[in-house]
Amino acid sequence: MRTSTLNRNFLRLAVVGIGAAVLILAAPISAQTPTPDPEVIQQGQTLYQATCASCHGLNTGEVTGNVIIGKDLVNNVFVQSLSDEELLAFIQQGRPVEDPLNTTKILMPPRGGNPNLTDADLMLIIAYLRTLSDPDASRLVASEVEDTGTGTGSYQWVQVVDNLDNPLQLVNAGDGSGRLFVAEQTGYILVIENGEFHQTPFLDISTLIPDSVYHGGYTEQGLLGLAFHPDYENNGQFFISYTNDAGDSVIARYQVSTDDPNVADPNSAQILLTLDQPFPDHNGGNILFGPDGYLYIAFGDGGNPYEPNYNSQNPTTFLGKMLRIDVNAETYRVPEDNPFVNDPNFPPEVWAYGLRNPWRFSFDRATGDLYIADVGQWLIEEVNFQPVGSPGGQNYGWSAYEGTQRYLMDVQVTSEVTLPVLQYTHDMGCSITGGPVYRGKNLPDLQGRYFFGDYCNGSVWIASQDESGEWGAELFLNTDFVISSFGEDEQGELYLVDYKGAIYRLEVQK
Picture 1 (cartoon, rainbow, N blue to C red):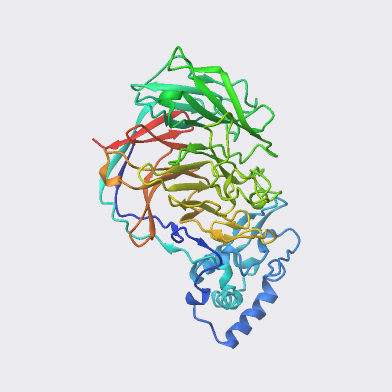
Picture 2 (picture 1 turned 60 degrees about the vertical axis):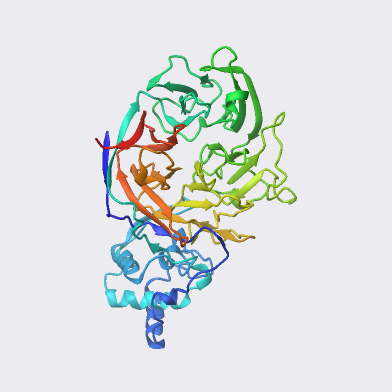
């Protein structure tokens, strides 16, 4: 059991706008620090050339040796996203760095390896770099999270079941039965009814998935997604996402057995689509029905864990994309209002692109708004927001951007980039797990709060948007869970899936 008291200890998450598509709109960095006089600039430039230029480029994309982190220093995240005080502390302390191309592991030593540099010298260098900053590259200066007014209250995670093998998802069928279905990565779907497992699996596809998916171990392949048709109560159809033994992503339709509602017909499988995966990582795999009745499918960029092929900005592939299809057909059809249905450059199934590994997304069951949690690379985990009624077609920026920051400078974007509404850096976690907006009745103080967590450290946060459109987030609970997903029952009550083998329900502490 894990308990928490919701209080006013707010987490420093970055709040980065209201989710509208923004093309290079931001306050200039000069709004953060007044422009120094020419003498100060000259002194900073002289120090930079003497002490920094051997490793770090400015804005021309140059790289010295294997020091990839030095590329485009001025418009790099370290300059654009940090205050002068934070940047000074960063240079003072130094840090180990692994470059994005995995060519070397390097160390940025304290004070750039020059112990004779004083704090005053470093501030001169920072002042010089600020004068070169392109305000169009700043991509918004993230603000600090404010009080979202959630009040106080005590909550606990109560264990429902355990002894699971690599559980990834918990969903309900929406058929009024109250049953919960757990998808294990190892290929089994299990039924929970009245707090207990049924002895017979609902479905077993363990022979279809790669041998690399083993009990108790970590992999990004296997049985990854489960979604029940909105009319499941009448048509008995459900859909799964998995990687087959060749490592390819598969979306398949199944039918419940005509004899037993707690067992699927294994012979009813119908493959809707197969996607060749270049690597075993970033397969995505989450599938959900939207409020429009269409099936949404999230695919990662296929990276390893880097993205050598720049798939997310490549319009010709499903990789790094979200798809939207109509499954009320023999296989599926493409909705006529999909954003790229008349664009010869994109497959018509694509709904959004520029995603790295959106392995968890959710629809607000009350409003229909879409939340996409996208796992980051080196620095940033992000939440993207798409309001109900959106026409789709958003470019979320990867791999030209990681969060709000420019990432690979040689990746060009040909459309406006939609910024995340929330992001946090890797000093607070390393892999975001998106959840739902709470719409249950048992926890009224949490009504309308969006839940998300971090796979690496077990932290859980809640977020919301105020009437002015500003987003805020706060730490809800620290746990030692490996959070693979959140889930909802038919009443909208919240569950947490621990990859180590258990399911928990959120309750008021008694």
